[in-house]
Length: 235
Image 1 (tube, rainbow, N blue to C red):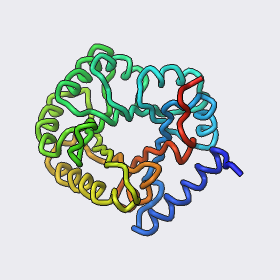
Image 2 (image 1 turned 90 degrees about the horizontal axis):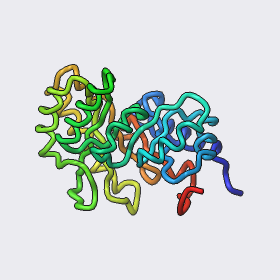
Image 3 (image 1 turned 135 degrees about the vertical axis):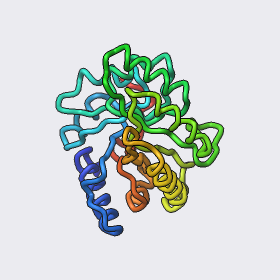
């Protein structure tokens, strides 16, 4: 029998609690970001009704189309690549932008925040740990320049780091990437000012989120395990 979205979420929460217990973490430190790319608003509403408070979207336009249809208190997360010409629209909706990967984008967010009167925009720096040409994100060696630029962006608060490892054949395949992201966060945590408190680690998806929990994730971007396979298109 096909499980409902609420049943899937309950199962995921239990698995998170078990993974957190294995490493002595409180499960309350970990948030599920239900990634709703191409999922209809009814599916998102079912997740919210089941207690999900954080919804992730890959595209600004898609999130805007759904946001007005969802009842309840929701924090919207942009987890996909953000084009600079979409920053203004993104700031009108998203609580957290996971995918800042260039000084130019950082400066655009700062400028748009100032223009819109938004006092603070929370962001994560996306790190391309595997050096995959097909993926966004900065190389670890470029983080220093990004953090230096962020010191001059008073309307932007860098809250942590995000990564998307190569698709794992087995969940354990992702562990080295999660360990590296946590090490990078720990390295930079002691080298940045209070403006850049790096609490968040956005890592772990449907196939490897338990490993991510064991390695310190605070934000799990889970789509398929909640919603099932993505439809070909919205409609």
